[in-house]
Structure formats: structure tokens, C-alpha cells
Length: 199
Length: 199
DNA sequence: ACAGAATTTTAATCTGGATTAAAATATTTG
DNA sequence: CAAATATTTTAATCCAGATTAAAATTCTGT
Image (cartoon, rainbow over all chains, first blue to last red; front, top):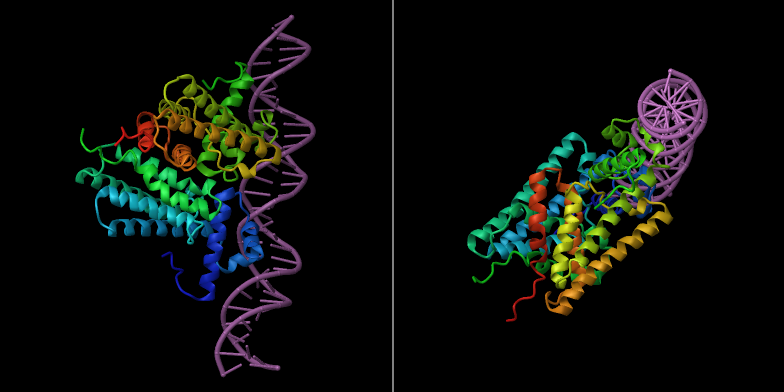
């Protein structure tokens, strides 16, 4: 899960760099973090980063791609697990949260898409929208199979994704909190979804 | 509700400026938005902003103070409304969301506190923590009075606040969506809170 | 230990955007 | 209307941080 492309030293270092960058970006924003900040976290000089990436914009772009990949994996795993729509939604929430607070993190919040190159922006936006639609699809599936009560699918999806996306803003790496997140978020965020037994 | 300090032209223009800044910051981040961006939204030159504010940092700071004020008002109104803990939580969610998407918005997401001056950072952090604790207090009140089921209060509070804080990332001012948000968010976000009738 | 490739640093540029001071324009008041 | 005040613009500075090229170092395999 979240396997670095290959085992070459280059790939490993690049992966370390993307994590460091994600941590910085989440803390201080894209423009707010200098390449020196990221490099410092790696014990390197800012110029060294250019060996791995063409420029700063590409660094964010890659962070976002990485986050999108993780989200897609969480989605795929949730679907693959089978069960009702509600089961999948809960499994997805747990999986995505785990991706953020678990060993594959930190994962960059995709909060500054406007700063990307037009081409990169389009690509990330496409991935992002596709992912949102897929999640809304799970909710609709649940409504169809009776495991989820009728609701405003779009708003519900936005609310749940927002709660997850905000995690990096208050989570700072402590393992105990990580456990509480993955343990409780599925319940907290699906409380309104579970279809009432029938009144 | 979000009353501008006084009616002088200065105060009115300053308030306009804070809204424009909030809009920019939410879209492109603190360092990502230039003063020219904010000024453009007001039909002004970047230099003109210095008539209202000492520097860029103070501009963010004031945006955050404004957001904190709104949050506090929503909290006060929710408490003043009386009823059970759950009633207050629901009223608070609606009120805060209304503050963000309603006529007093846009409201800046407090997502780049680290960029503030130490003094300002401390002040905003204090306000922010106090607010989070107040919200958690509502949840505890609900648990005590039986309107809310036992839960991990901290995680639940973080989840709900996250969903609300993320709204500006996907809400772009259209009135129909604003209505759906204030109408559905209280239900969506308290689904897991409502105490089950007793099994 | 050595050649060659991989990685990092040093030392300059270069640039966008914050900031400032002085000048210009608009607004208010008597 | 004219003086006084309030607001905005023009036209420089100034600087942090991105970017680059060349040099230095570290690594790898033999």
C-alpha cells in the first residue's frame, strides 16, 4: 500500500521528499513554505531538491498526485471489500483516514489547486472530481440497497470529505490520536447515513 | 450579526477589504494571494490597502479575528437559544454555516495561523482553542442531559468542525447551495450524536 | 584504490511582490 | 467655493526565495 515506485535510492529519496513537502505544505501552505523548509526537514540544501523535481510547482503537483493515488486506493479497497453501500462508505472513510494518519502519511491536503500550472490543475481537478463522484456513488448505492437513508448526496459527501480533509490541520503525528481517528471517524461520519430500521 | 464596527466610510471600506481578502485567502492561501489580487477585487491599487492596514500580516490577522468573532457569535446564539445539548449543537452548526455562506461571508478559513506574528498567533490560537473547548462543552452537556449518546468528544468535535471549516473550499457563493448547506449540515453532522431511544 | 555515475553544495542570478514616500485626487465641512 | 481632510495612485525601493550552473563530494562496481 502506497508502495514507492521502485526501490532505487533515487525513488526512495524522492518519496521522502514528497512526505516532507506534504508536511510543510499542510502546516504553512504552498507559497508559505520555502524549498529551504522542505530541504531542512531532509537535512539537505534547497538546491538539492532540484535534482528530484523540475521546480516547486512540480513538487506540489506530485504531492497532490500522491494524495490522489492514496484516495483512489482507499476507494478501490472499500469497493473490493463488498457488502452494502454503507459498509463500503464506512470502509472508505477508515481507509482514507488511515492513509492520512498512518505510516504512508503525511499526505498533502489538496487545498491550493489554483496555484498549479493549467495543465496540472486540470489533471488534479479531474482526479478530484472523479473521486468525489465515486464517493457519492457509494452513498447512492447505499440508498439503493436500503443500507443508507435518503439524503442530499452532494451535501453529505462534501461534509464527510471535509471532515477527512481537515484532519491534517489538527493531527500532528501522535500514534494514540491516529488510533482514535481511524476507530471513531467511520461511526461519527456515518451516523446520519444509517437507515433507520423503519419506523 | 457581523455588524461592522461603525458606519464611517473608513470602517465600511475596511470591512469590504476584509471580505475580499477572505475570499482570496480561501482560494489561493495566504502567501499565494498578492495584495494586488485583493485590491483588484475592490477596484483599487495594492498600495491603497496600506491606508487600512499596517501590512499583509495584519490583514490576515484581522480576517482571522473576524472569523473568530463570527464563530463566537454563533456559539453565543446557540447557547442563548436554550434547549438540550443536542439542540445547541445543531443550532451552533447551522449558525456557523450561515455565517460562512450567508451575507456576512465570505469568512477566512483559519488555515495559516503559523504565518502570523508570534503575538497574533498566540492570540488567535487562544481564541481558536477556547472555541473548540466551548463546542466540546456543548457535546458534553448533551451527553449529561441524555440528548447525545456517549462518544469520543474530542474526535467528534474535530470531525464536525472540520466539515464546517472545509466549506469555503467548495462553496462558491451560489445561493441555492448556501440553502442546502444550512438546511442539511445540522442533520448530517449530528446523525451520530442523537442518543438512540434506548435499546 | 580508481573510473565513472550519482548526489549535493556553493555561489550567483533573477523576479515577484511587499513596502514606502511623495504626489494627485476626491470628499467633506464651514 | 475654498480650506482642510480623507483616500488613492504613482513611482521608486527592497528583499526573500526560486532557480541555475559549475564545482565538490559521495557512491558503486571492479
